[in-house]
Length: 107
Image 1 (cartoon, rainbow, N blue to C red):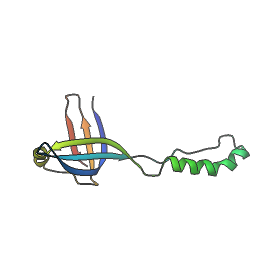
Image 2: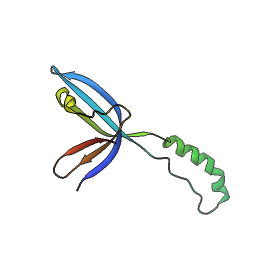
Image 3: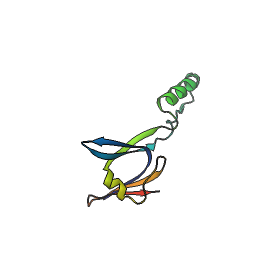
Image 4: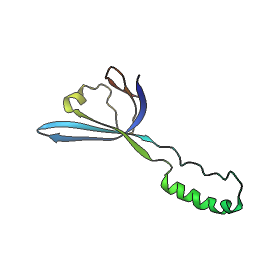
């Protein structure tokens, strides 16, 4: 079995730890729109509350928000081996497989 998803590279930073440089890549996915509020009974009292409920739902669930999915930290030499390095804003397909491989591919 494998798990495959696409994510957006939102952050790429370098840092140094114990005299060795690392590259930190942070991937996120866009979350969907807020859930719809419906009035199944057609109740007039509920009709008056609909605008307020929709406003509350929009404030709880912003239209386009990012959900963190994966943070990957590579040593500088590992980063340099990548031929097709992702840039911030690139969409990447991430695949985890049963044979313990993680595969990244720019979409």
